[in-house]
Image (cartoon, rainbow, N blue to C red; front, top):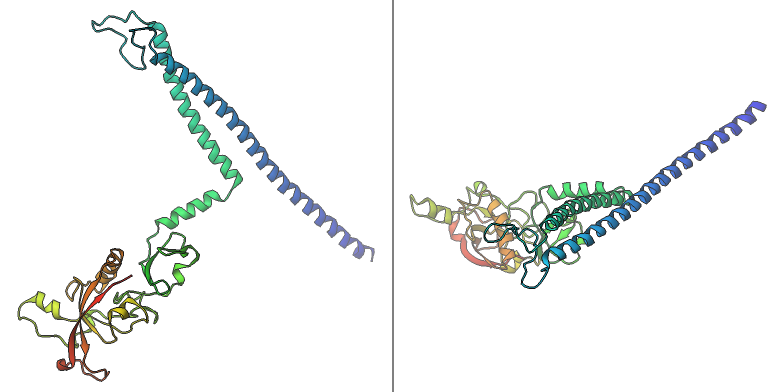
Length: 322
């Protein structure tokens, strides 16, 4: 029973000693940091006094070298020749003093530069002591800025195209620093064809298909042997959905429309629709419009066969992306 009563007391004493030692170590670390900061500040103050003293001395030397010693007499100068037009040493100035002042002036410039660099290094050290995690934060920020940026997204809330800041916030709209770029609805303009960006139903056009998947779609007749003419008349993408209030809806795009030409982009140069993804933000930045040529079913009936060319009509639209 005596042992059972003593064990808890011994454990309590061990705990107290452990906490006391921990507190002492923490206080010691904090004290060391304060001492280091105090020493840095004192050294900075000494260097600052020395730097100002050098500056005053340099100003005095410069003034003496650039001030004429008398009427009609040229000043000694900082780096002017010490000989006359005939090549003889100048007799109107003290050559020994001139050389001494010039040498001292160059020494001061060198010493001043070294002290300035040392002060900058010590200021960095002082900042690191006051904020130990600052360097780590700067490294993370630099690494984040060097990462490849994702493609722009269409923000249905503001009706504008936005890009991502280095910290993941939204750039290009007011209050974007309080919004998360990754949480924006993944949207595209009328037709981007990007599988990643077209995964949400709330985008302007949620998905498109490249011209390789539209081999069975109606192709208007083209000149035989003219490859360019065929490309200009061959649909290369289908509109699967149009978001309410989007530029695509404003322009008049509808579901099941078959895109033949999107500005300068057509079946032979759309690069699997990647050309559209790069073209739309450029036009939006210039606040211009895109001319779209498409085929549209004459009847609002999903049962219209793609091969029934008579049931399709050609439509031209003007899309103004934001």
